[in-house]
Image (cartoon, rainbow, N blue to C red):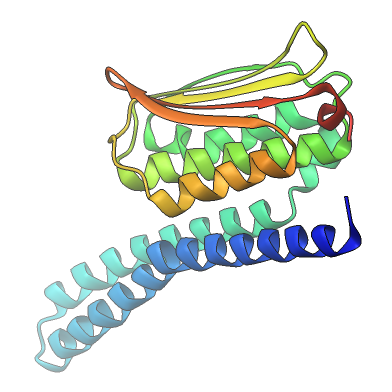
Amino acid sequence: MSDEHLVAERLLGERAERRRIAEQLHDGPVQHVAALSQMLDAALAALEGDDVASGRRVVARALEVARDAAEELRGIVAGLEPVMLDEVGLAAAVRELADRTAGRRGARVELTIDDEGLGEGARSSLFQVIREALDQAVRRGPPSAVSVSVAKTPAGGVELVVSDDGAPERRQAVIDGLAERAAELNGSFEAGRDGRWTTIRLLVPPSAAQL
């Protein structure tokens, strides 16, 4: 692969990452901050009108929204640099991610992850795909069940399967981004709906699994 091609792939990857972060910030914390501004305006108006009870109710709700915004921001920061991935491996990092994004919303999370022998680059790429798939599932309609599987293939590669029973709608930009990540690993990617389940599948060849 030429140096020019490597640079082009890196630029595409960085652009996709910036797009993903912008979407996460816009759909989460930015909306929360806008709501907070309106709530505080309402609380101030109530207090200035000597309606203390209403002011307290609005402030209490504003505190809940602020906590949600803080939690989402922590999740975004954790996704930018998944320290756990290096410290305890892919399985534990995915468990923490799944519990934070889907589990805290009441979804049943099932994980089957075999990361033995995976290279650092492969683990990082798989983690990013799982993170984006879970984030999209939660944002489009909280699922009641989520399944994540990472398994070795007979040829020595690895297969990632992420399924959820959330709303079927998915942003095409996210699907395209996941497909780009698969291409960076010389892997194959597919996404589809089967009954109540939305499933993404990524097959990574042996050479890329050891990167």
